[in-house]
Structure formats: C-alpha cells, structure tokens
Image (cartoon, rainbow, N blue to C red; front, side, top):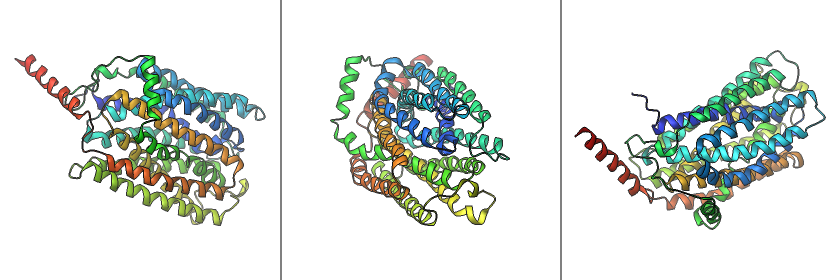
Length: 446
C-alpha cells in the first residue's frame, strides 16, 4: 500500500510512536513500583503533584491544542517526561532530597495533560466511524511497546543486581528515549491537512479563540453525558497505584518487576487488539457492540479484584525485600504474575472502551479534543487521590475502594452506551466532506 504522510493512519502511528517514547517510558518507570526506588514515598508524592496539575491542564489541554496546534504542544510536552526521569538520577545520588522529583512531577502534569488531550483528539477524530476501534488498537499497541521496552531495560541492566532500586544507567536510557519522542512530535501534520481512508477531510477548518474555548470548557461541566462519564473517568487510572506498588513492588524483586512489566504491557496490546475486533464489527449495531464490550470489561475487572483480594489474604503485609519473589521460582510466583498480567489486559479493555465511547459521541475534532481533555483531567483527579491513599491507607482498603469505584461507574456508563446512536450527529458533515473529495478528484481527472 502506498505510504501517505497526510493519511489518518500515518498520523495515528506517529502519535503512537511519540507516546511509545514518552508516556510509554514513564509507564515503565512507574510500573516498577515506587518508580524503581526502594522507598515509594517520594514517588507517591511526585505522582500526586503530577496528577494534581494534570487535572487542571487535562481539562484545559483541549483548548490549548485547539489554539496552538498538535505539533508544538506535543513537542514541548515531551520534554517534561525527560525532566521527570532525569529527576530520579538526582534522587539516586541525593536520596534524602525528593523536592526536585516532586517539582518535576508537577511540571510533567502540565505537559502530560496537554499531550494526552492532543493524543485523544487524534485517535478518535481522525478515523472514520467504522474504523475507530482499529485506530485505537493501533495506537494502544504501539504505545505499549514503550512499556515493553521499558520493562526489558531494567530487567536486563539489573539482572545480576542485588540492589532494590534502578541504576542511573536505566534512568539515563529513559531520558534519551523521551527526548527523541519530543522531537518526533514535530513530524505530526496539522489536522486541516489530514485525510481519512475514504479521502474525506478530518476537519472542516474552524477558527477558535480563547474566549470561545473557555466557554466550551465550562459547558462540559453542564453536559449530562460528560457528567455521566465522570465515574468512568475518575476510576480509569485509580487502580494503577495498587497494581504497581502493592502487587509488583511489594511482592517481587527488582529484576522480576521488569520481567513482569514486559508482559503487563504486552498483554495490554493483545487486549486492545481483541476488543477492537468487536468494537468495529459492522454486523452489530454500534450500541450492541458497546454493551457487549462493557460486559467483557465488567467480567474481567471483577475477576481482577476477586483475585487481588485472594492475593492480599495470602500476603497481607507484602514480602520483606530480601525474600521477594523471583520469576524463576515458578511455583511461588506464577499465580501473582498471572494476576498482574490480567491487570494489564483489564487496563487495555477499559481504556479502549472509554476512548471508543467518547469517539462515538461526535466526529468533530475540536469537540473531541475537549472531551479527551476532560477524560484525562478527571482521570488524573482520581489518580492524584490514589497515590496519596497508598501512603495513608492500608492495602485491603485500597482493594475495596477500587472495587466500589468500578461498581459505581457501571450504571452511568451503561446509560451513555444506551444513548449511543448508530452514527454520530455530525456524520452528515463527514459524508459531505467525502463527497466533496470525490468530486474534486473527478474534476482533476477531467
């Protein structure tokens, strides 16, 4: 197939590669538990600072992207990931001074909020309606390759290490990769030049200004559909803290944490691909696909929290660092590792469903940039609370909180899916854009 730089798929692949190198490496560091440090306190506080600023700039991110464009916003945001990883090199050498890492976390929250608003707009507004599940899966697979690479690095570098923390060399590797990701952001094309697979334009050019964006953001908090999605948004990253700190970090030694993350993010790729086949299956009405997809998410997450409760009853206080499980001890480690991999599948299913539902609301890229920003902002609000709970709340209560929050998100999520139409309200605009493209091509041939 002929390569087309301005095609929607090329742009989704490019933003996937940016996220592979920036958020993907961040996920790899965070997935080590305590960001690879023996004491998770600084990491927890840094993540709280990160997600606190993320709340604000996630919500504002859509407006910033609409005003400044995807290329420069992603370019500038990418360097915040490199700064955050670099702060752990400082922490390795000044373990009693976590202030730089916490400040870097706050700055990363600003950059990440803007980057993810741009990313969300691209992956749900660039594809045609019948291809949205596929495009989300393509992005998710490329993105999670970053987590796999980020798991391989600490696994290989720390394979013979007796330390319970990551070495400077691992963090330096992350910094280099994240800087590359930032520069790759400059390769993205403006949305006005991007075309879908049928030749239609992604966006009918609209002009916006600060005043309009402020009003549109405020309207999100009066939008019944957005309010119904709040529990889903709040819950969607809440579980990371428990999974990374109370399964991976509390039970496994440092090299096995890297080993686990290779498969945690790898199984996310499988989960995203599998659910995309359902979400794009044209033989079923879009609403029916949504209900079946969410039923799968419901079953998987209840299995995760049931398994987590059983694991907690076996290891209520975790395991002492000197006795933590190694992947070679298959008899002891197999069960917890399988549960951790199931957590990865569950995350991919949940996030894919969330983006698909948001993408089903409209095809307007400016609206979707705001919707994506709202989703990431409210998601970060939940994450900021979760990272502090890990410091102050015992593990069993974290399991209960996660399970209850997921249960609370189910009824409003089903309500939104029930309201989904087979075609978004601006499908006619998309069709007109495609017709205009075909007419233009015919005129050129004539």
